[in-house]
Image (cartoon, rainbow, N blue to C red; front, side):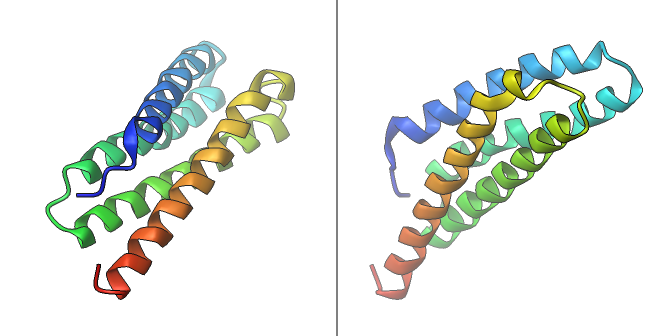
Amino acid sequence: MMNFGVDITERSFAFAVRIVNLCRVLERQGNVSRTLANQLLRSGTSIGANIEEAQAGQSKADFTAKMSISRKEARETLYWLRLLVESETIPESRLTELIKEADELVRILTSIVKTAQTGKKNGK
């Protein structure tokens, strides 16, 4: 449907790769870390998958719904990353850039969803 360019697609893919690599580290740390890794892996890789689906949306409503799901997954990922820091599972210094990128993805996706919803309401 709408094409917001390579930027969000590529950024979300690169982010997913970083999440996969982080989860590999967490897997080696034991049961609690493994459980958190599974949650983080699901949400962190789902962001880009839903953006890809949105790009092939069958309608503006479908596009908006998929982007909204991506935004929810980005927010969830941010939650898990913050939890890893606050629970002292991973040092904050190792996750600062990943948390920043997750926050930026949330902001970008929020903007995309708002734009898509506004265009829908205006009959565009």
